[in-house]
Length: 391
Image (cartoon, rainbow, N blue to C red; front, side):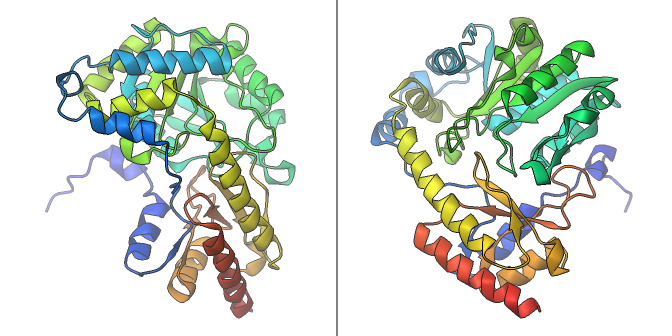
């Protein structure tokens, strides 16, 4: 048979989480620390708003293709109240099927084959592979593990030259880094100096701990005119199954994103748009309880793993996960994760290609938001047993 594969598919690397998740599904009772899910239940009013939309004509239509007005208004409200950034809900916001679709829509709108896109290493695998799907070339600026996974700004000026876009997330997956104002301002200045677009992934912008604050690049100086923000309710509001995301930016930039969206996602569910609108427009105070729950779980898992010889981790400032460096154990991350799952029924993710293609063979991701505290404590004991048996 002929080779029918498109060249673009040959360039991407399969997400390591997918294979681990499939294996974990086949092992009953596995402790799921691999998938960036959350088991936190959203307030009843959000669920009710979703249910009540079923069967109503206004929530059962393709139109408007840029998303329901009530949801676009709610998104604009959040940017105004959270960051002081004003977006016109009529022509500066497009609702998508999750942040992933929004990212691909933006990249397809502005990245040509061979265009260089500056990203961090490590970063979310889904960001890197979408850049490749759009034909772009990822260029990486390193996050310094010894400095809490923060940016090595000494190389920024050189790396940003000839890039068309700077693409980063805060809180950053998988490290949980919340970039400081100084780091974000440096990225903005690099974009201005090199006339780059900025694509900001805020898919976990509300998931922050210990007094850290996400800085949206569009809030700095005149950066709004070159910045497109994508986000979603998935992780920020623990609403993965709703599949609602968006892109927001200047009308002249968002128009192209909307056009790609029409031929890509077309529209997300009107029913779940109703629930997302309620989440964004309604009382936000419940998020504090969610974050407190996540922080307790984070501390149980990272404090427990820190007591295991050979595992070295940086406490995340935000997000759902953190990385453990397993270099001292003398085992590749893929083998570590597969053996740990098969022998101890604990699922984790090898970080291979979560950034550079050659990154991640010495790093394993641990998600702490989808298991209860007692299960996390059990996981620590099982991982300690596994590591001891490696010697």
